[in-house]
Length: 71
Image (cartoon, rainbow, N blue to C red; front, side, top):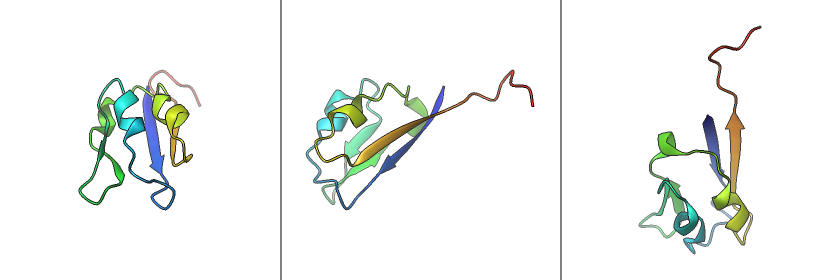
């Protein structure tokens, strides 16, 4: 499954909770003290980052896999 991660930088305080709960180490705190996606292709869309963020700054959208889809 593919996913799209959206980070609302204005809300993010760089606490790192989302990165700590990510089982695939997709997120990291940048040098500027904000969360950034470092390995987006490894995201399994589990939603742990979104659930744990105290500031509602991160959102994970699951994208449908186009393989085998019919129009």
